[in-house]
Length: 84
Picture 1: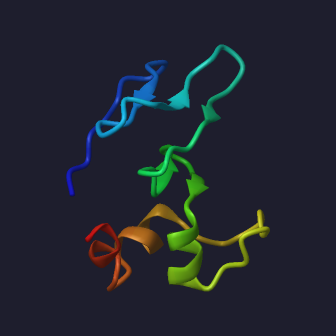
Picture 2: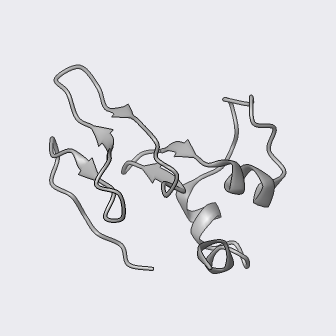
Picture 3: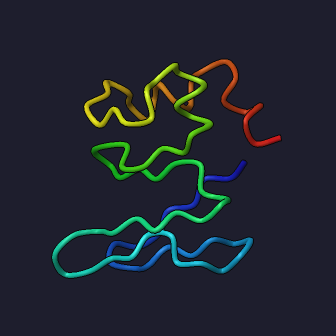
């Protein structure tokens, strides 16, 4: 896995299907997940999590108020396995 920093206000495009997964607008970012998006995070929070992340941490899919940080995610012992 490779971490890539995208300049602020630049849309994020999936490298596999070329789908815009994070659209930056003047108001706020909009997440439009494709089948390849596992999570989307900003400097301050985890903005989106795929179902595989919910299963990894035992989070209900409908739960919006979850206490999960990007560090929790990347430091989980099975984090690398979910990409295989």
